[in-house]
Image (cartoon, rainbow over the protein chains, first blue to last red):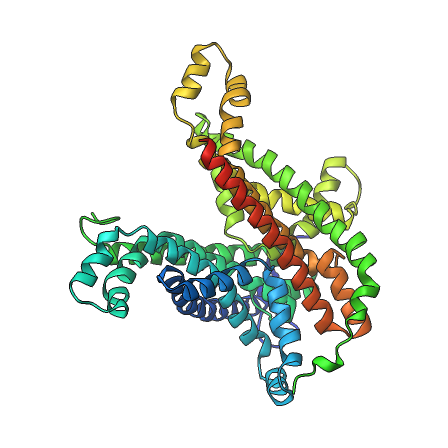
Length: 243
Length: 232
């Protein structure tokens, strides 16, 4: 391979004047973390609402849940981001559209909401399965104790269901981090984007991508470790993953 | 009020041949070949992971975990720049050889999807009861024969709905070749959108097409699943 390796490139100043190339990549990592965490919060909140809707006896509620999941699951994430970024501002009333377009840091917010809603469909499906896996007696017992539907979900079904689906939720969070890289297409300069611009400025393709790869692996490792800890912390003794 | 009145949906009709004969053909060909290649290599990786040679299992496990921790966009960039060097190394050429857009994305998607398909096939192989390969070897079948005629056909059949669902995901993921400015379906729509300044119409149409195809396909998978469930 006649490629000129230069691992010292990371310590050389970047052309943006923001320090070294390493600083550039770390700034990208911070953007990736911020956008992923925000997207994950949106995914968890909306995904929980939709997942609960899908398990309610009401026909109407489960129909809404069904439509939501099908809508966000059957389009590529990239296309969804284009819809929110390019199409939505044009279809809104003029003032609202203008406000959206002039939003400072628009790619960041679009990415967080877009990835968040995309992931919410997956969270909803997981939660629905989690609630469905609970023994029927749980719900019946809560009703017998006089709990309202809201109380049943709040105090009985959801705390159990979330513990059950914690492992798949971990991989969905990892997917959220990975999916945040798609936002490069609407101009968000996150980790992959910074690696790409480092490659364009310095021509050190493989060093740039190697660094981004290592940072993604590290991020993965941190999340997996933290989630294992959380799993052990919330485990109910004698139940599911309890020891 | 909304600006729906200013929309020109005729731009879609005018660009239909380009969108489907070039764009969609690229997307579907890439999806089909990548699914096939991903299945073949994924099955090999799954066999490596389950093999009694610990080293093979370790290598396969490392590959799968590694690929699955990276964003597809980053993997696309990796291969886009790496494949010419690999080609040079393989052919012994004096400089990196240029690989076409299609070949580059096909190699990327096969390498990427193999990691995901291998996990599905591994689950499929593990779902076969132990008595099956044991009986096969009692009948005198070699390892290759027992895999070829006993284990893999059943594993494939059991996992068919999951494999097809993964193929629908793959179909949607191929849109990411957009980052290399390759005219797949979305790339073609985007090209027309930017040329004619019709972003709203073209992206809405592209979304609709992806949506309809994915919906119909997943409906088909669900039907297949219920049919298989009755057979078993």
